Length: 259
Image 1 (spheres, rainbow, N blue to C red):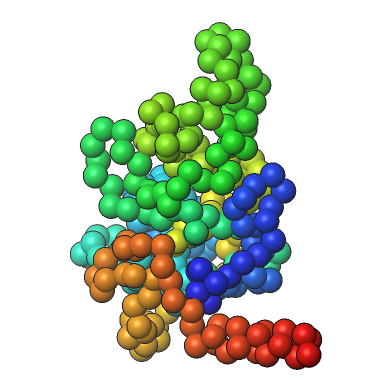
Image 2: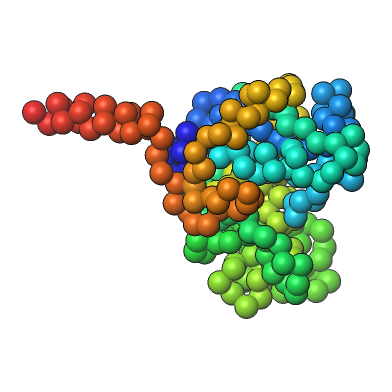
């Protein structure tokens, strides 16, 4: 299933795409982690953060779709023998859960660890920025912060607008996590991976055996990834063979309808 070709319904008030697991988002995803963390996942308990793959999203769980598996594959073998070594898991997701699909708008980049840089790259001003600004302002009002130090909705929007000087790169991902959860999403999907925000989204867990993992690793690298890197190089992602077939069938149907 190719990122650029999967279009769902637009969610209310957002320009981003609102997807539902199993209906228009894959039911199975991959996660590379430590063996200690894998045992915790299988037991249905929350792993300690230090036992899980450390990432820029704090407690979010980064997963890969099977047709762009590089991120999960790298984390499944990187990191030496600490916590029992590494392994590759397959998560089966609960059906009917909402995923905020931002894959046409941003992807994760290498964290530079300097200044106020955001570890994500934006294609343009995200379509949901105004709504996110309203959400942040409303949270400030509800918490009393706005009364103590009034700054207004325009300031709140500027803080989450990457085209503005007031934009806070260091705060962006934590704010995006809280925003998505408050809007009823269990996960956020970027161009190169998905961040699971709610542990309850994971219905079951299995370890991917070595032979299956090798087969996954032999897939053609897609979405402008270079082998051995976690990150996309652009937002381009060519359609799969199956998607080309569907497009041809759709065009054929449309052609007959106009005759």
